[in-house]
Length: 179
Image (cartoon, rainbow, N blue to C red):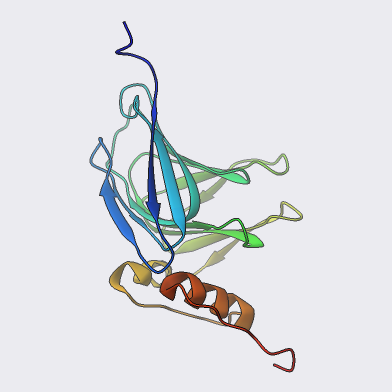
């Protein structure tokens, strides 16, 4: 019986575009440009695990029995029901999680440490080189304005702003050395 054989679904948002999907458990995910989400055909049966590359905004359907997990190479995030933005593009130096509602637990995959918990309007930034996780207080909703075709920048490096613009609009931007 091949009915139970596990297969995987992959949803992608190409450069210059966004995708919105509803997972089998009712969780809604927006994928930002140049992102990919992968989940199993067994999703919602024995787990609610997804693998993310890039950036996603999640509105997770509450389920006390089966936690929702977002897995990446550097950090894993576990929740019951919540709203958060998760950014981890391969060419980013940092992983960023902004929590809008609920509570999340973050497990550092780079270096051993206790799980870090976020409450609403907190942000976690993980340095991919050192594995250092830092938590700060923010206006978390600014992190997910991209789902409404807006971009928000706050004390960001010009090269990071250029990177976001290139992804969002699928254009090439060159930053002159003198800037």
